[in-house]
Each structure stands twice: as structure tokens, then as C-alpha cells.
Amino acid sequence: MFVGITNTPRDYAWGSTHAIADLLGHAPSGGPEAELWLGAHAGSPSVIEDAAEVGGFTDLAGWIAASPEVALGASWATRPADAAGSATATPRLPFLLKILAAGRPLSLQAHPTTEQARAGFALENEAGIAVDAGNRNYRDPFHKPELLFALSDTFEALCGFRPLAEVRGIIAELRLLDLATENPQAAAIDLLEQRLAEGLRDTVDWLLRDGRGGDSGEVKWLVERVVALAEHAKFLAVGGANIGYAGELAAVRVLAAEYPGDPGIVLALLLNRVSLKRGEVLYLPAGNIHAYLSGLGVEVMAASDNVLRGGLTPKHIDIEELLAVLDFTRAPSPRLAPIVVADGVARYRPGVSDFELVHIHADAAAPSPTPVPMRQITLTGPAIAICTVGGFLVAGSSSSRPLKRGQAVYVTPDEGTLTFAGTGEVFLAMPGA
Image (cartoon, rainbow, N blue to C red; front, side, top):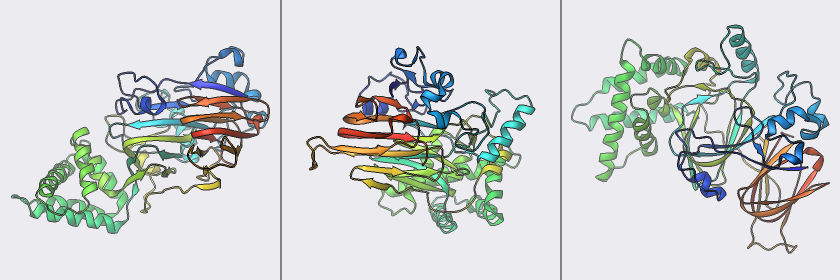
């Protein structure tokens, strides 16, 4: 069964005013459009285009709750636990597909493991904290791994703690810039180096705790000095100087403009600075600290709303809980390579059972053995597809549906193997194999 779905983009302040509309061929709203949610998450369940097709239900969450065996399939509707392994009495769609457009930097954040989410959710329930309270950390008992496929020419992000050698290189560059000023303040840089010698976890703790109203004022001074040195680097570069870690210092300037005085500005220098090209994919497992800076992408994640913030935000930050969730392993950014299963069909499998992403691409200019290029993919469960370029006829075992640019469809698992006939680009999200 194919069910047409749509939604209204979330108007978070960091959203682009035109990127989602440009991609999908829709009229822009005039305000920020940050995320288009396609799924059954209670925060913004997809709207069903023709309620008569599904017994009068107007949104995907309502239909799944009322008719899980039809909407999810018998296997998914009768599972004693969701795809993440967390016990739940309510059948649920385990993933959420998004179109994400960052016009401004998002907050630094990380997501918990399943075990952490279960425990944290139960404790906050016992404490009587309302699920929608601003100081709530865990809004559900599920983990929230996610991946992002870059659609813009470049997608800029911070992701995971960078190798120590690179951090030392940044500190050395800051010292050189400091010496090139009229009033060097090496002691500010000494503070960061001394803390790092005590360990990465202690450094993050110090940055967040002292930087958010601590008594010493050390982090406030450090942030001010790092921002000043980043501005000085820009001045020197105009004069022809070769600046090391120019991208990282440019990010400092951007973050300082958006979040003046925030300790996350310095914390960002400890993270991998990632610049994805179109078609590259970033995977963010539990505990990975990250922040999207700018760009347009397709995001798919486990259907959860658990976010532990770590700076670059006026919202609630629970430092102790964040430190418990963070993975302090130093490593390059976790990019995810495709598994090419056929010409024009690539699967992105991060190793979780909640989701995988399939990218289907058929170029009208490329030679094809048939008059209309065809691509096939076998479903692993309920699925959602969105067309971002061109148009296709999508056929399953019992029905078919045209899918054009800007359109999305929910597919029940009984359709089996899908055939995409046409040219353009489609993204298909479904449970992990």
C-alpha cells in the first residue's frame, strides 16, 4: 500500500528561509524552515494527503496506532520490543526521515544509548518532571543514532573529538597569533593547555561549568581571547599571511557572532571540523558530540527526542548528564561509506536496527538497457520515500504510485520489492536489515 504524506517544515530559528522550498519546489513560507519531518513521531507526525485511503485518519501516527498490522505489517505490529530493544506496549515506526536545512549553527549536542535513555527516562518520571519541561533530558526511553546525507554542495559540521595531535596544532597556531598581537596574553592559552593535560573529560567539564557562570572567570577570558585571535587571523590573512587551521578559526568567528561568550566556541576547537561534499554521509552514534553549522541534507534517525546539549544554546544544559553520555574517544569524523547494491542504488547501513537509508539515482543522460531506467530495492519493513529530483513510477507487489519532485509516500511492508521507473533522485528510509 502506498500512502501519500506531507508535512509543514519546523520553523526553528536556525533554519534556512529557502533551501527546503528550493529543493522540493514548494513556495517558501517567508520564515525559517529548519526540518521537514516524515514519520510518525508525536512531535510532528506526517499528514496523510488522502484520509479516505486509511479509514479517515489524518496523520501517520494516528493511523499506525489504530491499524498497526496494516500500517507496519504483522511482524512489526506484534514485536514485544521496538527496533532499539526498548520494551514498549505500543507498536511504533522506529525511524524518522527529515529534510534538514541549517542556515545558522545548531547547538552542540549528543544522544544517549538505549540503556542510558531507559534509565534516564525512568528516573525523570519518578522525579515527577513533566515530559515537555524545559529541564527534561529524556523525553522517551529510546536511543537516537542518526546519519546525514549532504545535499548542498558542502555541508559544514562539527563532529566528535579530534585527535590530540590536531588539538596541539591548534594551540600552537593560537600561540603564534597571540605573539603577533600588540598585547600578547599567552596565559589565556596556557589555561586551555593545562586543563587538557588533566584529561579531555575534565577540560569539557571546566569549559561548561566555569563558562556558564563559574566563579573564576577563566573560561570567559579564554573565550574572549580565542575570539580575538580568530579575528586577528582574518586580518592577517587579508594581508597575505598563511593561517593554519583557517577553517577552524573561521568557525570560531561564526559561532561568536551567533553565541557571543558561549564556552562552546572554545569547545568547538576540540572537535573535528567536517566539510561534506554532496553525496557524502556522516554517521552520528550514541555519545558523539556534534553540531551542524550550515547546509542542506537528508537526515534519518531513530524516532526519539532525547538530546543532551553541550553549548551554543540558551536552552537547558545538564553538565553531569552530558558528561555521562559523551564518548570521549578521539577519532576522525565518522563518515559512512555506501554499499552499492546495483547501478544507481546505494544503501547506507550504520549497523543499527532502527533504520537504513537507500539513495536511488537514475540519470536521464546515462545509457540504459530499457527505455525508462529502473531501479529495485527490497523492503525490510515499513518505509518512507521522498523524491528530490525528477519523477518515478514506484511499483510494489500489489500497487503502484507516481512520485514526483517534492512528493513523499509511506509504503507498507507487504509491497515487498519496489521498482522505481523514471529518472531523478529518491531517498528511501526503512528499518535496518
